[in-house]
Image (cartoon, rainbow, N blue to C red):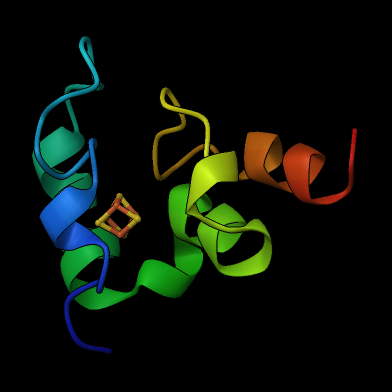
Length: 72
Ligand code: SF4
């Protein structure tokens, strides 16, 4: 899969989310460059739209994304 289409405006990718995990650089490779379909932010964006993605949702936070997608 090509680079994520959200890279230009993504606060995670552009380091605008404050304190982030030490593995941030690795996450950018795994999610942003290789497979955005596994990214929590991208999943919420895809199903519910950009405005619904929480500002502090990091790519690895899949259980939080599932909670949002299931309306919990
Ligand atoms: S994969 Fe996720 S974190 Fe990376 S640019 Fe896309 S939406 Fe942002």
